[in-house]
Image 1 (tube, rainbow, N blue to C red):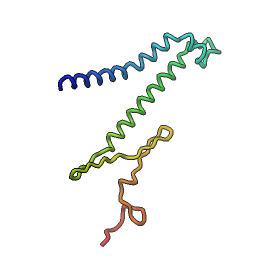
Image 2: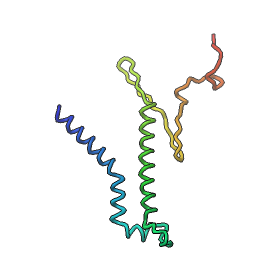
Image 3: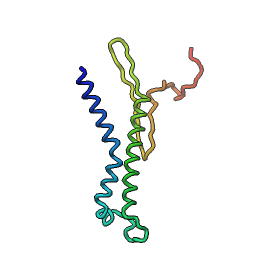
Image 4: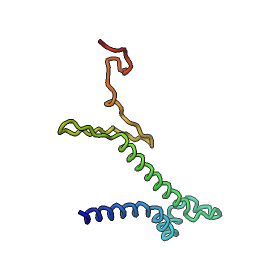
Length: 128
């Protein structure tokens, strides 16, 4: 049993290490391929007085990595916050919200969470 825990711990540590090495990998890629990036991807290659040297490409890559990381963190957070289990006897119900992402905006469908009444409102006088 101890060996299984050690394997899982090593796996998780290696995943964290890989995640932490994404930004340095982008920098290494930029330094190794600098001439190719300047010739093919630099948007300021027509203006050598700016001395961009492909840093515009590097900035785009870093921004894309950061946005992907933030998107993943947001989706994970929303899933963990709004997911819950309910146990009734031997049955287990797992409630997960429907989440839609449209142009960097996240919406949650609450239609199943609220009781519906005839007029579409939850605020009504008590019914006898």
